[in-house]
Image 1 (cartoon, helix red, strand yellow):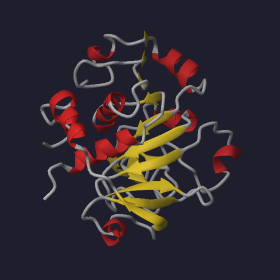
Image 2: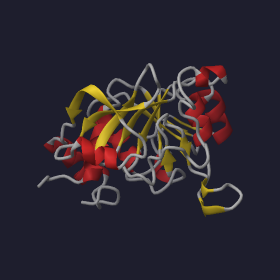
Image 3: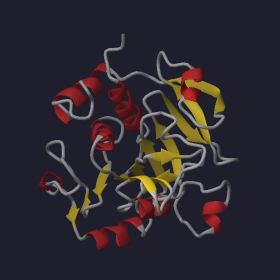
Length: 255
């Protein structure tokens, strides 16, 4: 039995992927914990940017929302949302952005708008917020979301935020400056994107998880990396930081 939760493994895997990065656009929940963990471990110079207009945030406690006052204390800059989006995001200064979604397809296109027909939806979701602009302009997009066929679908019901659209060259053809999705961290595996086809690729399975289990949670035949790895579990120090400093109440880690 593992001494860590699936959420803790997702957080540590996401944090390690930020090694060497400088500017990350982040929200609340698991991505927020991952970014703060990265700043304490593999990316000490990481600047956290929040949609509410905060650049260089250093939250003293777990923020409850992107408008939580704790994000402002000690931040490098607090500005309006339009200024943040125009000067930092559209200005090409965001190296990595974290997003999530209700649905994702093989090219990393995201749906957070509706489940079912747009005009007669089964479920109406929160919508884009700033996610569409972030997906277009960020140099890289990382995603954290649980694996499952309801989320990893052959065809999304609505494209809220563009990934690689329908394949290689599609983003560039529409003038999208950002690089699109590069990484998907789930509770079963880590997926990346093939440079040639722009399709999602299984790159690493979590300890105790088989390729068949991962495929069972995806709605299309999944490409598998030739050098398929096993995800490194959290270290004792990473778990200490998460449990004692970043999420002591286990709000997002389930511990």
